[in-house]
Figure 1: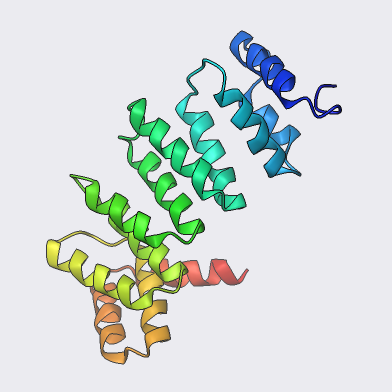
Figure 2 (figure 1 turned 135 degrees about the horizontal axis):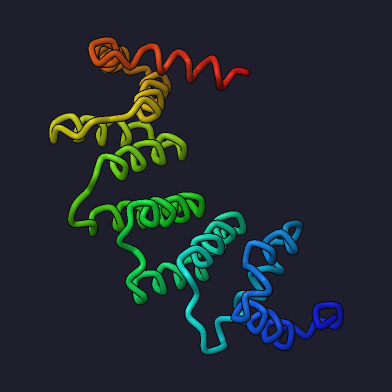
Length: 201
């Protein structure tokens, strides 16, 4: 009713009470506003005015919507909330934040976030390589892959496929052959071929 009359402040208060009582889940709100992510972000902005700390699941879900809407400012604020609440230590959270900045075409922020991480596990390295290829930064992706190899960080089959794609874009035949040889040696070829077939299906 409140939304029908564009009273977002009252609607946010009702939603907050329902969330606190457990009678309404954030996933329901996402489904409810599924056709209009901008409206969901408007409600979230109103909710942020109220004295409440959101769970990591809610913050990550809204961050994904910010990426969809390219709302860099709100996403940056959510990233700050994750840090402030001490919720940013898990690898999957870091990957979600990296995805957000990449989707908003702020690869500089992705690099800064990655550099600030004290212990960079293979998942984060692979994520950084894949994001650079997906955003057309093929040379940067190839440089990162070489750095991974130098540091002894293992690349997964998805990152390998992305780097091979980058080599094709760059017409880097020598590097592509070297990576192909590494794939064969590490027995990742069947996984990559299966992935290619799966992507074509």
